Length: 323
Image (cartoon, rainbow, N blue to C red; front, side, top):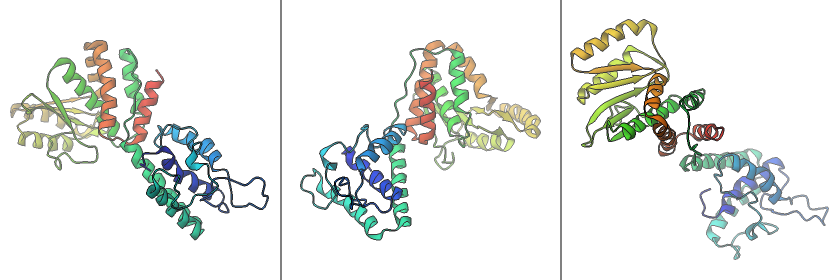
């Protein structure tokens, strides 16, 4: 699935899908002998590649390559695939494809063919995760439109991934635009802060690499336990300023949380709890068009750098394309 030649990448999805669609077909065959009515195992693999697999591939950001007719070239203009084909540039790679398809054809077992096809889909998914998407940034964007993009992006639940992307991008843009810090460290969404040695989801660093601001990102209701855990980690790292972004505070914890802000201040820590969109509105208005452009750019960088799920990257790309 990661071969340097596009045709090789398309081969298994096309040939296996053809076999699944019609088990009587020979998955090593590439053409049907139209002049021979007794030819029951031949089929038009190029048409399946062109009309089904290629459009699917285009919808999935061209993970197999940009060809809309992948079987048009000479490698697939043969009646049937066979080992050690001297016309192929990469004969060992070609033999790998043939070996897989020969096993499928020998077993003639729908369950086995399905299993192999599912593995191919999994490898396509892994390949897609490794690709960097290109996001079409508008030449300018208004405050309201930028906020609406963020709101639309958060409509689908993502286990906190999308919220972390947006918040990371916002604090990145703040650092670049206002010069309040030099860099932002970010944790992976599926790794605990303690496991990777971070005090919070985001750490804003000065030029010497010291954490001057920690940001904990929640896409759910914030609890007192959340706050206590981050305060403890921040105290151990001697971080004085801690931000929490969450859509709401747990009702029964609200009074205790307000008291905790006061006691944390008395002990030397500044604790701030805010809604992402309240902060974003102020920051993106104060920084003007430049910081809004930087924010949109940073969202794309976070999505690519942290290998966010392809579905999230596709959603952001489509939202930008809708502008």
